[in-house]
Length: 141
Image 1 (cartoon, one colour):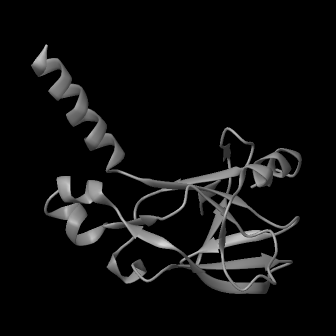
Image 2: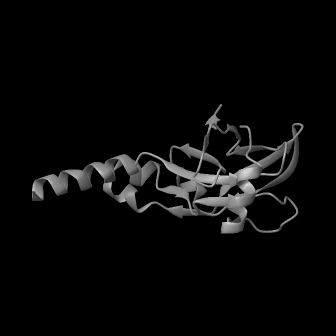
């Protein structure tokens, strides 16, 4: 029984170390670029918000993950998303710790108002709005 529990725990750690994910609330008709790559959303979270799963980020993103909001291919906002150190990268020595230790800090980012000075974490109220306005775009191109 102990071997089964250990195997299950080990498998969870292995699988969770492979990606980082976050959901986004975006303004209508707006595209998102992360680290210079345009994001196309194909998945949604439980609240109906656009969800992105991707490989973790390198150390240069520890101070924030660069993002750009585009409308009609014009930049309407360029800033950094809060990032965080991924504890699971410790269990993937040496590769994850060296190359991919950074992930999204929040499970959801509210980018719906480009005039806001700071990036906000989504609230429960935002989730209900996200169901009505889901973004048509989920995969890195």
